[in-house]
Length: 353
Image 1 (cartoon, helix red, strand yellow):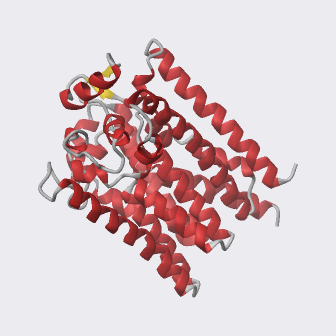
Image 2 (image 1 turned 30 degrees about the vertical axis):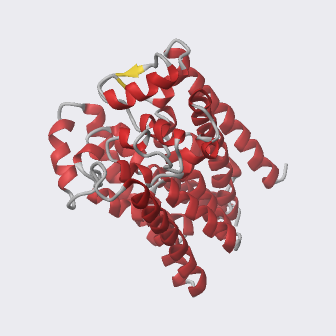
Image 3 (image 1 turned 135 degrees about the vertical axis):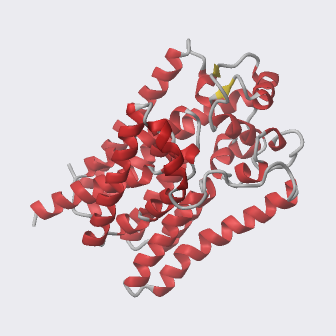
């Protein structure tokens, strides 16, 4: 079977696996699909918002997770009625910056609440398949097997994102798709996908910067400028739009996930001592970062440079990101998949020489 056809098989396997994970989570919640929107019993604003539109919903302990905000955004993805919708969330301006997933899940604003609960799941499952296909394409371009594309759908960070209705899967799929297209010299589509990745999760700007640095080193100056300028401009224009819609003083306009270097790591350390799993994962992440940076410097591969910025970003993560394996693996998920490609896809290429 040709590698291009095999990459489609990889995508199909990824779709089946992601669907199985979603079904398992829903089954454990007595077949209540709202579990994948991650509403929390202690977040009364989004809980009330959801119950007014859906009736009784599955409630997770404490505050819940990101999906509850994306459900609100999906009901009004263009922020046409902020008082009715986006003002319900904790940080309206910050949350609204992540617009692509809600636009897709909300059908561009055409779907009702009942349909949105299902479309949030469907969009993320499809993104798992597309992301795996994109990673398979990257692996092929590196001289490796398309089966390494499963490093996307098997990534614990992306799995966690899917199970809480978050935007990381869509962002990751778009970013790896952009890398694949850059490797095929498809500049226009590569820039477009990276722009979509940034509009899904603003942290993907580091991927745009890493890609730009790689292209600049190769002497592709025009492409390097486009790789950063277009996503940055799009994100800035959307940021301006939502500030005009919501108002600069609406809610708490701040990024709580970024702080001073190493402070979040130091503060989380005490909590890790009481939780062996979180401690083990944190130490594993530290080792992963060191090995990943080394691989990037030795290999010089685009997929490494595109995501190495997440290592620098991790140094700035606050305690709330570092404190649990669930959060830190979601935050640096692209690094995990990129590391697999650098280690194994590159090894495949060396064996075939």
